[in-house]
Structures are given as C-alpha cells and as structure tokens.
Length: 236
Image (cartoon, rainbow, N blue to C red; front, side, top):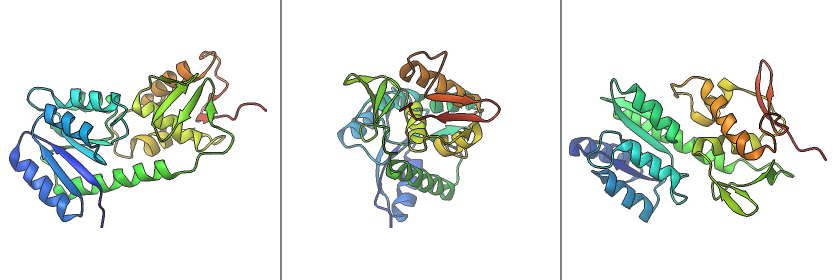
C-alpha cells in the first residue's frame, strides 16, 4: 500500500472530507487545510509528497500558492494537482506554466483523482530514480543538482522554472537521444497536459539562456530540425 503524504487544499469542507476519505482508503496519509495561507504554512513545515490545490481560495489564491511553493527550495520539487472549475482554462494554463503538474476539473470523479495522484507520484519517483549519465555533472555553463532541484553557476544558485529544470534533468539522463516535442510533453508534463507543443520550445528557450555560452548558437541543447531536441555531450 502507498504511504505517501498528500496535502489537500480547498475551502469546501465537503470536498476536503471526500478527498480525505478516498485517498486515505487508498493508503495515503492525508492532511487537509482550507486556505492558501494554511497551505503554505503546512507545506513549508513538512513538505508533503504531493499537493492537491484548489485554485479558487479565499485570501491567497491557488495560483499564488502554486507560484510560492515552486519558488521555494523546500517545496519546489513537490508535484501539484490543481482543482479547477469548468471555464477556467486560462487559470489552468497559468497554473501549469507556474509549475503545476496536472489538473482535475470540478465536478470530478474521486476514482479519477486517485488515479491521477498515483500516476503522478509514480512519474515523480521514476524521474528521481533514473540514473544520471556518467560524465555529465555539468551542462554548458551550469552544474545540475538533481537532489536539490536546482542549477548552480560558480557555486551560486541560478533561477530556473520548475518545469524547465525537470526538462533539463530528463534530457541529462538521456544524453544524445533525440526526443520529439510530443515525447517531451508526455515524459515531463504528463499525457494529460492540455497545452501545445510550443510549451516545450518556450522552456528550451529559457534553458538556453542559462546554460549556453551563446543561446543563439546552442552547442549543448540542440534542435534537430523536423524532429525535436537533443542534449549533446560536450566535445572531449
């Protein structure tokens, strides 16, 4: 049985109770809070394995909670599943761009929610356990701290968006292998991500600004015309 911890955030007590009962029945340890402020406090005090986050919260709303959690080194690695109402497509996209990992639209099936939680935790475990390719402790101008979920340049942290880091980590574990944009969306964002493949291009652009000596002439994170992207080993 799974023993992962889940933090559920919603101002609707009935929804919280249903989520708590359903996930607890599935073997998860579930904590529930009803506001963005309490969510930030709970997550920072003891980071859970996953957060289920309603976007429509009083006070600090879900998008701001997502942004703050993903910017905090203590919680940036924690996957977030957003709970959204129908007609909030813009908020969904905004949340995903802030680093959220998945979303479920209200009214939702508890069975579907539990399946999404299980799939996301499996994917997170897989990414963390994939061995780092030997000979690549550095990528271009930066060093990659996988366990700390951060980039370093000359020993100093470099600001990086959560999904951009996950994209780089995935490519770093598969050097020399060309991936299509669709494959990268599936492996890094998940099969249910509603965005377009241009999302990958935007994140590659962000990464190149940090890792390439000349982002206009990338030598590490390269485009394979008509196919996708590849992380090349630096020349010997």
